[in-house]
Amino acid sequence: MRGPGIATTKRARRLRQSDDDAEGALWLELRDRRLNGHKFVRQFPIGKYFADFACRECQLIVEIDGSQHAENKYDQAKDRFMISTDWSVLRLWNVDVLKDREEVLETILAAVEGRLDRHIETHELRFFAAKGYGEPCL
Image 1 (cartoon, rainbow, N blue to C red):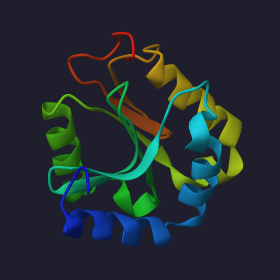
Image 2: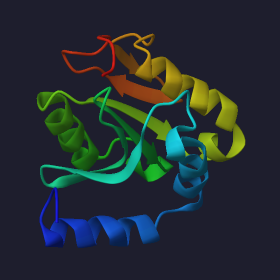
Image 3: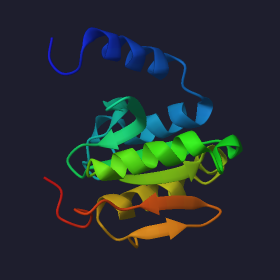
């Protein structure tokens, strides 16, 4: 078996099976290179954390959150860790995925293509760029 250990793989599988409506809806748009040919994976392990979605070529993590995550200390620690390991983090609201999917996809595409500002914190989204952000994807 390639990649992470068996326990990590089992946990990632459990997380994929228990995703919410917003994650499932977004996965339908991201899977099979449907977003301009960029490959995304679900429940990607990085250290002790799991990212909802990851584009390995662009070092981008996409997290879909409910309102309970607005000031969540766990998520803040997770973001710091991801950024310290050279992953940029884009956090979006699950309600936006369900109601404004085209705008969400355009925002994700802008992040993949390096068109977002390096640091954004608004009511609609949060984006934290790692040091390599903006370089061409592999």
